[in-house]
Image (cartoon, rainbow, N blue to C red; front, side, top):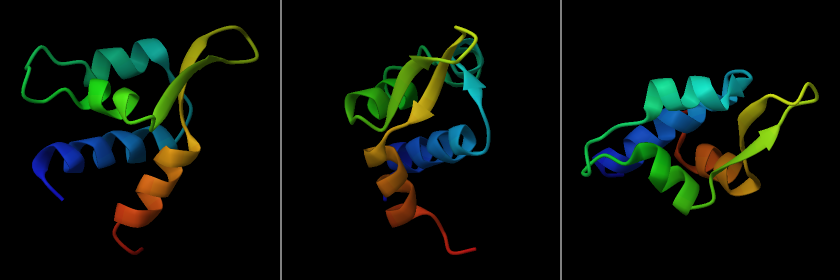
Amino acid sequence: MNAPDTLVLDLLEWIDAGPRSYDEVMTTWRTSCPRLPVWEDAVDHGLVRRERSGSGVPSVVLTGAGREFLRAHRAPA
């Protein structure tokens, strides 16, 4: 796994750990560095998606592909 993939894995694990609002994800993971587009890579590869929570707050969740990526790359517990 290369460095960007490792960062995408970190992002997916962080999202998987608990509910994350879209604003929280953007504040924590958005970068202006064109060499480390972690959020953009995760979206482009279909690993995460935006949706609205029951209260209407935009949130970010893992897709099926994101959960599979975690299963395939996460270190054993």
